Length: 364
Image (cartoon, rainbow, N blue to C red; front, top):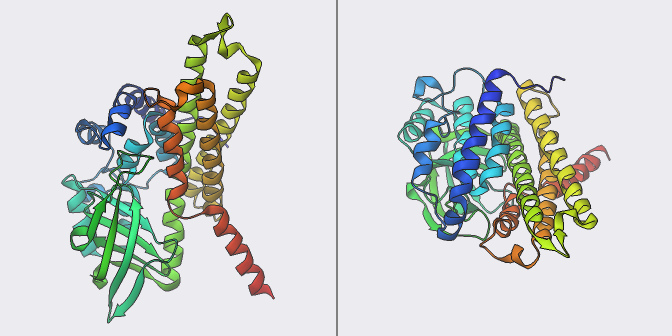
């Protein structure tokens, strides 16, 4: 396996890294306190190729050819280093756009891509707990229940819903949405949505039955690889902040970064974060190669990255001491942000346990 980046990937990584260090980190604290993204995010993100990178060029997007999940993971890591809440908004259109482009009808493509091209957002909702009630109405579908909390849902024009054995695109204008501001990713425009016999026309149903289960698994694979990369970025950022603080904080006549216990603490966290990054990139590479193991790799990458970001942010707070719990310092926010990575798209460990039990039962 060649670990070297090609010229385009190298340029993207350097560009997004500069954007994250200069802009996302600069906006992060104020965006967290306000619970809202800065106005400049949309314009500057669009200039850098976000929002429309998964929309085909014939629909006024930027995608020409196959989508590169590896490139997405590389940039996602850098976005995570900057601000995971703003990263969630920059990445939110990818799954809906790719899914509709691959399985959607002409009507679904027109509706979604027209909205995204005019500056709209779309998001992904996975009904992992089976909260939705689905009933057929001829070739259409009626949906009742609750979605969320989901980032970007507060302002999204469309939501891609993965529910048991059906994958569909829904416009949000007929939903009752309640915006919320959770403790993590506060600026990510979270919301819940309540559907009451919400009608989904046949043109907006992307897949049903076994085909839907296969499609949903693929969509979740994309999302999990991206989450893993961003989580690894947050883990690394926490240690970057901690290292800088440890060099400046003097106790007993020396920087605390020279204390052996803190050296070991940070070193172990960096090791975990580095492993999580490599695993996320491996999963994204497997998606691009069409490997049958991609889904499992993405799931395990997300688990590893989730563990790494939790550990790194807690350790960073420990290095800061009492200041680590004060929101004047960045690691308090990162520790809250780490929790959001566990809240989306279901419990990976539980899912594998249930799958293993079902597989065992099928053999008996």
